[in-house]
Image (tube, rainbow, N blue to C red; front, side):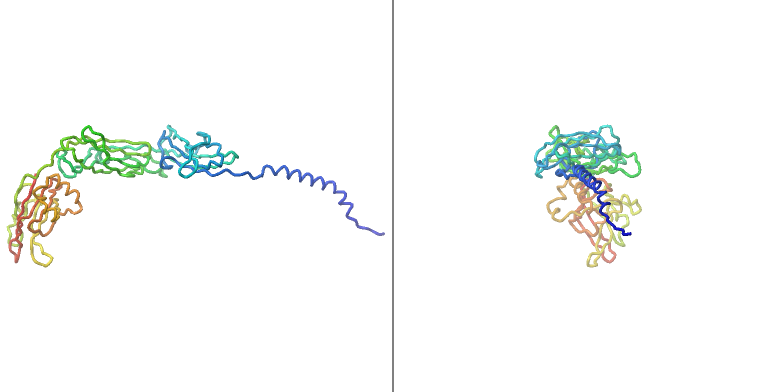
Length: 428
């Protein structure tokens, strides 16, 4: 028997099915091409806020002027704002048709107002999605997040003492302030506040950043005048600080009123102080002379002097009364001389020679001396050291009133002899 092998009949039997399958595959290819066709993408979009950019804290009810930038040729259809409050479901806030004006960047800038919900609790987290939709259906999404924060607060006083409102830098009374004097006003910004939301829950209030703290003064019933500004005085956290102001020229005989305004975005708060009546400067009209001695043989009860009392004090007296005390000192060459120091809290400032030459000792007022001491606080010392004739010192007596002291005679102590300092001083 002869057997022949021929595969063709099998293929012929399957040919109709293969042909039908190819036709079906061709039809399927045509059907799935359409959903996967590549469309032209839309352009790009930017997101900011006027006038100074987006921030991370906004107050309830605050209106944020969102600025969406895009190329006009990209054919924007609209801009939709979504918000997610406290990680809940997203909700549409607004949809704004395309428009706007050409900005400095060359992009079309569309302003989209967004209002922070007024009923949100302090520290609530909010996410805002701003979606730009183009005419071809493409979209661009830009996002920012913030926490709800309180508007700023401002009051006079300190954290420890709400009644300590002012500090008169010349150490004179409130009724003795004159032109050019410096007054320090104690302020508390965002009392009890925090700058950021901590990981651990807290009852403290989250405040907006304070952009600036501005000082104004008004003479009499005149218009307010801006006197100075402190930039970024608070990141939202509580900040107790003292702001120095100077009594303006032309205010003598009138009342000057100072006010302070803290700005935080569109919000501001003002604290206004009680008026200060500006008077003529106080003269250092009382002139006294004194003498203190030093050395092994010097009388011990003449080594110290009480500037308030105007007399020497016994060696056994309390140190609190010894404003000027003489002692033997050595010069740079090793020779003996006499020096002066305070045994209490009285401090001295050695006035420059050029200033002394201009007649400062005879013309300076108590207001001027007090201000001089404040402006040279880092140079004040209880021990001015060796002294010479015509040395002049501004003196702050026991942390209070100002005086002027001039050395009029010096007798060095040599070989154990008695040294002596003779001085004249002017006081209120």
